[in-house]
Length: 258
Image (cartoon, rainbow, N blue to C red; front, side):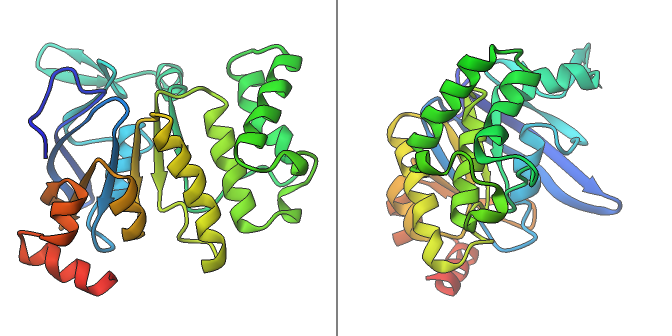
């Protein structure tokens, strides 16, 4: 992994997280630079999704800090301590961090277009005509221009996930988080979602992706971080980590998924 930098867009420093007596993150430290795609690999229970959820404060942390574009996420520094922000302040921070989940979490009673314009209208107070025009542009960007007036129940899983990506992009985030975005999809639908993510990467979107899609990681990632047992076991560029892993735990995992 590249040396730590004070100019990285995402700075994760010594992050710890407990669920009861179980410590699921044991001092995670890493950087993600602007325009970089970082893929988190690891077995189930390794802490990948928990770390991702900590980045936009869907989970609180018990130690360390996470900074995005210079701002400590979810907390206000007070001397040597951190005090959790008011929910409205946290919501403001989240506007610049898009997140796409395993399940699509679309509003079932709203069309694809309405799902996308919801946050710009309610949160950002955008003019409706402008929000609709931007939503149509985003639907075209993810290959769904003709499906604007369809409800989630009328869309395939891959189409719903592409709407979810467009919805996240509508807030013009500086960072996109993807939590196993293809794991709930039928195999034949995985490619259409990964293609959209590849295009985002080519356009320079900063992304942190939890996935088991090794081919995607090899092709798109700038760095791969392998986690197990709540720690970073190994990190590096895709060619070296996938083709020549240095740690036995990494080798064992890759052998199980390749």
